[in-house]
Image 1 (cartoon, rainbow, N blue to C red):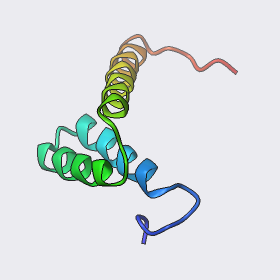
Image 2: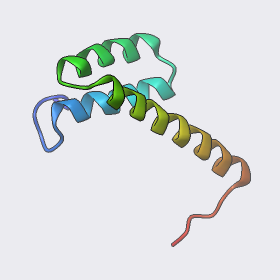
Image 3: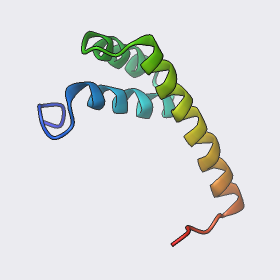
Length: 73
């Protein structure tokens, strides 16, 4: 199972799930995985920083797609 112990720790996996769920606008998923991440030690500061990164990534991705930005090699 993907959420089972592995190379990524359980908190990191929950935070990835929150990021993807926020991007996909799944309110249920964001809430349930935020609850799970808090139970695994995520602080309010961590959640705030995560959501800031998600927001910035979504904005820059939209701009890169709009302007068809070439990938630097």
